[in-house]
Image (cartoon, rainbow, N blue to C red; front, side, top):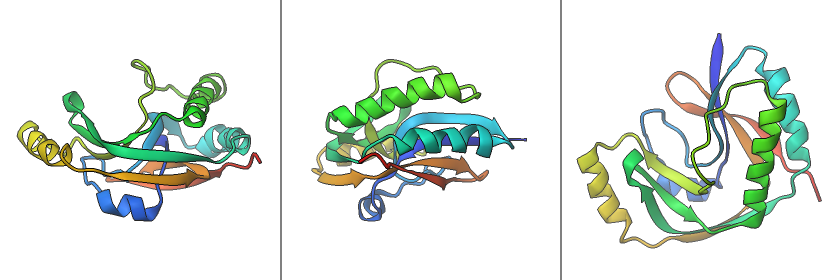
Amino acid sequence: MTDLFFIALLPPKEIAAKYESSHALKSPPHITLIPPFKCGNDFKKIIIEPLTDFFNHIAPFVIRLNGFSCFERNRVIFIDVINNVQLEKTYYELQNFAGKNLPVKFQEKHGQFTPHLTIASRDLRKGKFREAWNVFKEKTFSANFSVHSAWLLRHSGTEWIPYCEFTFKKK
């Protein structure tokens, strides 16, 4: 049996609560570091242990959010993440580490890393997406939050559940 996972940064509850979404796979608002992948029953040994070690070497950093944007083709509405050297470094180091050390098949990367806080996706039909986007594109939003951990999310069959937290321990 295989389970479905992805790795992401989750904002604090006060930011997440404002923009809970309920798209087809029901995930909390998040910044994806590694998109969904499948792994067998031995995931604790082959995924959690190596990722714990990887994230032990990451230092906490601050995420700055500003405004809304979208990926119209995929019907995704998100909050923009301001360019962040530490986030990009963590993302690329994790991609490299995962490719070399985690024996699972990852989705092929398409283009550059575009960090964003996903708040709605896949649940909106084209007409409803345009309607929602017309509302969001006029709104303003700005927030900062400290990131002290990454999360392994596991799909329950109906929704994504934060399953394992990886605390950043580098000082």
